[in-house]
Amino acid sequence: MTETVRALQLLGDRKLELTAIPAPPPPAAGEVQIATKAVALNHLDLWGFRGMAFAKRKMPQVVGVEASGEITAVGAGVSGFKAGDPVVMYGALTCGTCKACREGRDNLCENVGGIMGFHVDGFARDRLNMPARLVMPVPKGVSLRDASCAPIAFSTVQHMLFDNAKLEPGETILVQAGGSGIGTVAIKMAKAIGCTVITTVGDDEKAAKAKALGADHVINYRTERFATITRKLTNKKGVDVVFEHVGGEGFNESLLVLKRGGRLVTCGSTAGPSITFNLMQLFQQQYKIFGSFGASMKNIRESLDKMAGGMLPVIDTEIGLADLERGIARLESRQVFGKIVVTF
Image (cartoon, rainbow, N blue to C red; front, side):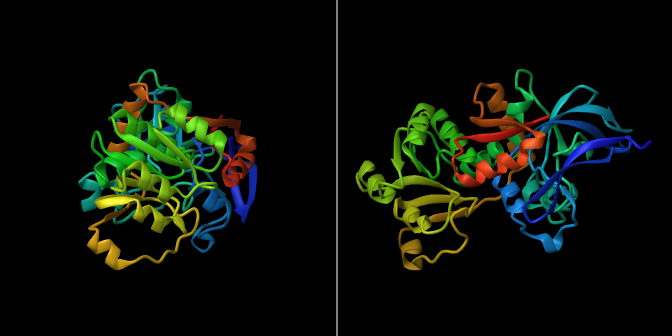
């Protein structure tokens, strides 16, 4: 009888099913076999669940773009890993040989084979094989639940704030949607280096939680105009950096709160992907706008080091594999504060 493992597969638009699929073969040369222990949910999962890019995807497809696990076997030629090691996995099948990959800019790979759980089978299965070069050890003292938030949530923020926006100690930053998975991380990372943090949230309960995380000023964007409040808080000078991942109508107001020469970094468009803005404002105010997607493996290692130092993710909900659809529904409802993690 063929051995099987559990897998959560997307069958079509908003159709998820927990099924049995053939277990992976022993790892080939250069590979490791991993038992998945935790999958963290992201808006990429939500986009996939809604049916984005179906034309380019083979169905059914195993979901899950961010995960941690434990090594169960190593293939020939693999050093540095052994059975039982806790690890996290890079969420894209990079080539490892192009100029960007050689320079450590993994998220700009010129020959990427796809994003796990979005273009190719993802991590929401009991076991899988991965190239060892795309696997990183989890430091001692960091739980696999927390570590599952490093490959996308923590590392995306690390890349946005420090590689792109080059946030410096003592600066003032506006973090949009501070109750989201990456918003909570951005608050923590900015406060850790002594920044003044202004953040927006959608209700008073989230406002209290954002304050507890360390945010200096919290604005309920449903009842207040965040641009007006932010300008007042900065004596009309504006903020040094805007951490933006919402898009839509709020994007222009995010530009309005930047000081001259300020930096806006964005990685999302949950409120809408299309905007119109004033080019004269852009060049006269000398704004710097950075588009940011994903992160490098270096960013993931930096994130794991921060976790080992005590900076842990905010966990909104922990659920089992069979309840992943419920977790996606919660993510879609925007009631989340922090991350939703699926444990195996």
